[in-house]
Image (spheres, rainbow, N blue to C red):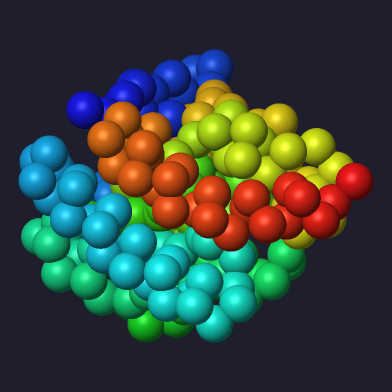
Length: 198
């Protein structure tokens, strides 16, 4: 089951009808809705990247870019470090490879809720949908306070996009079942850092 709210650009600025989609419709083609099996498969693809990253000593964050069919994995990225996050790195890479109209029909799927930096980069890359499994609140519970590996902020993806009249980026997440799996797997990493922090 997923949590999905209204698109971020539902309300235009004063004057109405001034959204980018109304002015440049060719850059905002219709997106195909995602089915529950597609959501689950997308998160599993991201988890596979996260597992590989953790095996090489990286933090448990990963993302994949799904094509307009909601199934084809076009690109993937893991967390590199505390500045080069999986989602922002993937969004920049996607923008180098594909045009805006194509990216608007794509979906960035992340194991964790994208931070403010990553959400803004996804916005500028013109990726039309964000899906995440685990929430920022769940991440804070895992990392704990004062964890030098991740000073988790108090934010949410929807907060960053709230009131954005230009684009109606769809946000789906957190995902209940998939989020539970992400939390359980990620805790294998964060439990070690919690013990060593303080």
